[in-house]
Image: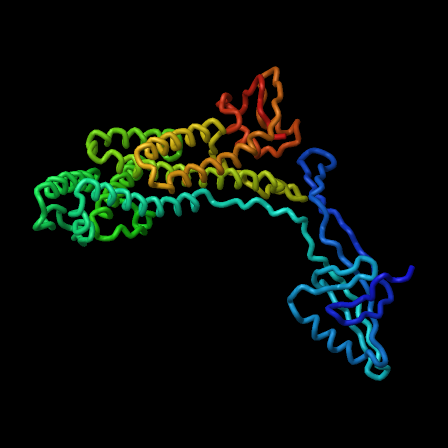
Length: 422
């Protein structure tokens, strides 16, 4: 059949002997110990590969050397296929041979198309990174919100007070002179609050590499107030560090401690609520990120063959505790309720809404995995390991199945409706 298009490669004419195209499927093969055969999964088509042989001879021989130099480029190439038309891709291989005496050259090419369905993959963003960015922005917003409170309380006199740089090693009130009695009384209250905040758990040292340490609060009055509250709450997180292995307990304890502080900082309840909601969001994001890392590690272990062809053990699955869906939802609900309380008091902090969204998006992604499960009726007490074997799941899946079935504390004796991954 005559060619519909004149074959060229990046504009260079091709004298083709033949051209053929290879289409392949990407097939994933899953093998299981002590079971014959394998389970396969179609992962889609690989990139089409076009193989062809081209000649240069007589008057076109010199063009061969120009083509050879062109092949050294790393850009995408444009191949005009005799039947397919223009296709873009890269030269996978090039096998040339030439003879100057006969002024003849031939080259065997393999051309791999650069093609992908026009579907953009969903971007999976680290929830911890996203919330950390929103936290830093939230601290700046909180300082602006407190500056607004000062202007509302002191009027025109607030401008000079807010513009003054304070010595962070000294009390606040003595650093201001020539101010009105009203301003002095207001600053006296602020000074007492900051002094109390800085004295609370003062013997507990926060990590030097904490996020708070990287935030510049400046030397102004808002920075002193917001920074002191943020550092006080951070010391509570250090105090409760031993309970991090139980995320729900850790977050509940931190929130209860923040509520206990409300009586101490009653005159600055809005600032305390804002600081507390931001910190709870940050801690939840950190816990979610760590939990997701453990979940992915367990999945990686599940995809690793435990025994090699010689019968040697190649994988040693670790016992990594992960949160179940109820724990994840409970943690999210606790944090979002705290965020709502703060937003009800001050709607000028858009970063809190962003934190709530980032946490919800992460939990939604996690729950999508929990939803791809089936319920199996187990009439008699059975080990999760046996259920994995019966349903074609790697035995290391038991750790994730335990998180999926919190009603069964003992993995060797499960009975009734048991959830398994489909």
